[in-house]
Structure formats: structure tokens, C-alpha cells
Image 1 (cartoon, rainbow over the protein chains, first blue to last red):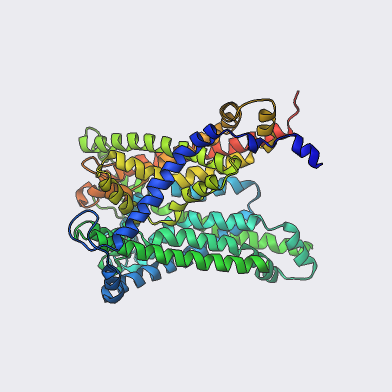
Image 2: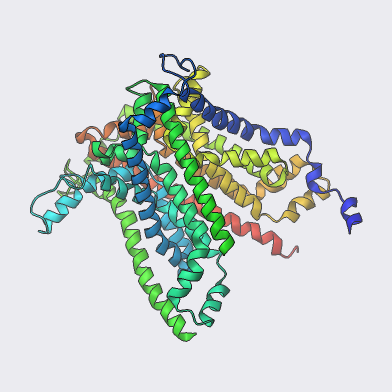
Length: 295
Length: 277
């Protein structure tokens, strides 16, 4: 056996250096310069003080001290985390039954339904947020519909420019992100496991709780991650439907690179966001491993 | 057993209704944009006033709009080409290169999914200022390659992985070089996915806002133009007419990309089982 393997060189061994170099060049350049080097610059800048020049001056942790001690930044950071957490929770909880239906009940309609739930993702995000603005506005769709149908007598300001508006809009925008990973996880559960559970006398709810749910947790965690990450730094939605009471960290970062013109401080805020995301990723990984060992 | 099946049918019906309601939630807000784009009123509110094509007429002969559109198309085409080229090579080397470097490049290429758009925008802003480019169209192209890269890598990776390993090995065993195998065997077999990756990358670039927000110089792209128009209540109906056109075209492109992806996967399985005659 080993002789046969040795007699026929494996195809991988034959890749020529020139081929490897040419094939790795474009991706290598992009990943090194655009991702690693650019992110390194942000981290470097975060430890500089602002003297108006492009890369700042000196080496200091002053920016981080400000972030940690100024209550304004605490408030906004905590708010971003709470809003992103609520969006993640709402999106995953509402997406789960859809993914469940796709995996276990959709049959021939599966491909069509999968296409329908992912389609909005490929259309303009800006327009989807704008759509929620015209729904929630004072003289908008929801208010006018409520008055037209005599449920309400006067338009209310309570919809737009609230954290709730941000949560609903983001949950709507990131819905396709949540459905896909959960569906993939549910789809890989062998049907024989469910049959075994039912043969052993488990009621449908018990087999859902003890078999389906634990086995789908990797998908749930992946979904939570891909919803949480873009949400926590989102700029467009708080700016358009959030109002001043729901300023999020993305808005603060933008203003440091715009009006405030304090790039090192903006970089420090960005590093903090990346640290938060790193923590969330690590927690998700740890949880994933726990569920993996149990399943 | 039959009792259990009955139960799943009943719960399936309830779930079906839930999915229907979910689709309504997903599409209703989006469909308001086309609805109000034909409404003869500046206000986006019920009751509808009357049918008009006036807002679509204002789209014609608007130099700022056509400039932004041209800009978006050019940037989208170049960025999608770059992202697709990187997606093809990165995923090919990841699967067949068998080197830690290729695996690392592939992992880093999918990293931007875990970086919020604001941070992608500012990191590139610092970078392009450092190398003396400054905000420019080239900077936007680089940013969009980065934003679209995870998608093209994932699409191409699953496509290459679906091609039976034996096909590539057969080509190599018959004496074809790496280049020939890649160009004459692997690339044609994955052509539908290449097109699909390109279209999805184009849509991502065409729609991308926050990176452009940081990197745009004097020439805005379409999303930036829309953003600037949203401040003026008078121009909202025009934005909705423009939005309707964008939504329609995006739906069509995404539909074609989806079809290509499925057709590609179907074709990938066929050579493995097909009768050689």
C-alpha cells in the first residue's frame, strides 16, 4: 500500500513555486496591506496623541484613559452593547422558527423560500432603513394608517427617534444573516435522531428541547455573531431613525474622524469596539465548544 | 408513529403561517418605497393621493444623479473584478495549495465580516492618507474589494470544494501543468460560481455606504448621493423613484446570481455520476 502511494507522487507535491506565487499574490497583497496593515495602523494610532498630524505624536494610553473614565463614552458604549444585544436576541428568536420550517417542513418550497428570505440582504441597506423612517415618522405610514382606520385620533411622536426604532430597523435589516446559519445547523441534524427520540417515547416538545435545540446551538451562536458584529458599530440606522437618545459608538467614531478631527481618539474608540467584538467571539467559541462536546 | 406525524403536520401548518407573516414583515417596509414612488404627494403617508410618474421624470437629466450612477457602476465593476480574482485564487490555494500560508490568507480574507463597516472605513482612510492617495475613487475601489472579499471567498470555496477531487487529479496525472489544470479544467467547471461571485460583489459595492462615506472625495457614489438627498424633504419622492429602480435591478441581479449558483452546483455533481459515453 505504502509502495503504491510512494510510486505516485501526490498532485499537491507537484504545484510549482511560480504557480503558487502567482496564485497567492493578489490575495496575499489584499490581506496583508488592506486588512493586517490597515488594522495595525488603527491600533498604532490609538496609542498616539493628537497633534493635528496624520499619525499623531508620542506614545500614550491617554485616549484609553479618557474612554474608560469619561461617563459619556461609558454611556454610549453600554447603550451600543445593549441595543446590539437586543437586536441579536430579537433577530435570532424570530429567525429560529423560520429556519426550523426551512429545515424540516419546507420540502419542495425550500429553495424558493431560502431565496426569498435572503433576497432583501442584496438590496440597498440605506433604502431599507429609509423605508422604516417613512413607516415610523410623525406624518408617516404607521401614524396615518392608525388614524385612517380610527384606531388612533392623533399622530404620535413615540415611534421615530427612539432606541426601539433602532432595534426594529436593525432586526429587520439583519434577519437574513440569522436565518441562514441556523438553517444550516438544523439541516445537518440526522433525521434518524428525531425518529429515535420519538421511538423512545419523547413528545415532540421534549425531542425539540433535548435533541434539536442543543444540536442547533452552533448555528444559533454563528447567527448571533454575524448579527451582533455589524450592529454594534452601525452608523446609518442610529443616524436615521435613532435620534439623539440612541447615539451609538459608530456615530462617535465617525464624529472623531469628521467634525472633532481627533483621529487618535477615534482610533482608540475603534480599538475598544474591536476588543468588545473579540470578547464576544471568544465567548461564542467557548460556548460552541461546550455544546459541541455535549452533542 | 402516525400520531407523531399528525402532530408535525399540525405544527408545520402553524410554522408555515409564521413564515408567511415573517415574509410580510420582511417585504412590507421595502414595498412601501415603490408604492409611494407613484403617489402624487410629497408626504409618504396614507391615504394615497393619486397616481403619478412625475417623480420618475425628475430622475432624467439630473447631472448629479447620473454622475453618481456612473461612478457607482465603474467602481462596482472594478471592485467586483478585484474581489472575484482574489476570491478565486485565495479559495483555490486554500483548498489545493496545502500550505499554512494559503490557509492563513484565506482565513484573513474572511475576517472583514467580523469588522464593523465604520472601522473598515477609518482604517482604509488612515492607510490611503499615509500612502498619499487620500480620499479618491481608487481608495473606494480598495475598500469595496475588502468588503466584498468574504463573500467571493465563501462562494468560490464552496464551489471548488464541490468539484470532485478526482477530476483535478486526473488532469494532473495526464500531464497537465498546474496552470493548464486551473485554466482549462477547474475554472471552466466553476464558471457559474465565478459569475455569481462577481454579481454579488458588484451588488455589495453598489450598495455599500459607510466605507464610501469615509473615502469619497469629490465624486459620490449612488448611496452617498441618496444619503445627501435624504436631508431634503422635497426630494424624498425622487429618492423613492430612484430607490424603486435600484430595488428592481438589485432583485433581478440577485435572482440571476442565485440561479447561476444552483446551476453550477448541479453541474458539479453531474460529471461524477455521468456515463462517460
